Amino acid sequence: MATGARFHIELSRQLSDFLEDPLGRCGGMMTLPDVYCLFNRARGSELVSPDDLLAATKMFEAAGVSLCLRTFASGVRVVQGRQHTDEAVCLSLAKAVAPRPAAAAMIHPVSGDSSVGGSSGVGRAAGSLVAAVALSGLGPGLTAGDVAKLQNVSVTIAAEYLLMAEQRQVLCRDDGPDGLRFFHNFFRQVMPA
Image (tube, rainbow, N blue to C red):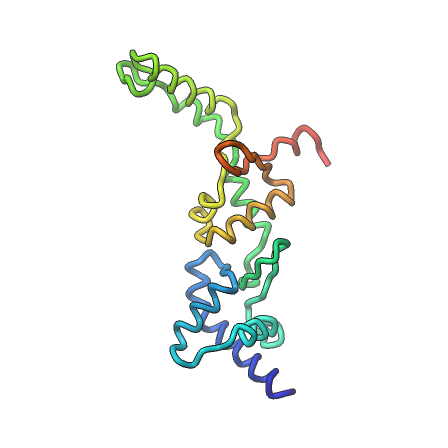
């Protein structure tokens, strides 16, 4: 084995040991630039070059560690644990956007409250709008920011999760005046594969 390959395998093992806690705090996945910054900040003056770090992440399997390098369709590269699965992410996102019929029953204007359905016309209109949205049955829409909070990952990774779930037909996008939001995919029920 060449000296360079041995160096990268040893660096892979060091990365694996180092990333155990940070990956646990970051939802099991971190972008490669985040890994680079975090790892080099911890190393102090013994910095690792971007090329060496990339080569080390490509050697995770050869080093026998439980991490892997993944490249999303958009080109975003991440380091993740092997136990991290797309199916689990899709299931979590599907639960987050599932229509909640009970939510419509919970939204009732309180009598005398002018802010929601009270005596003012504006309050009644706002209360009616909230009730109409709740009764529409669409369920909550998700943005990348919402998913970042829900999954405890960066917004970049959250956006990749949404696109991946859309590609797997779990979510359906709405690119409207309020921005890009993802909803439960009702088309799967209407038009089975």
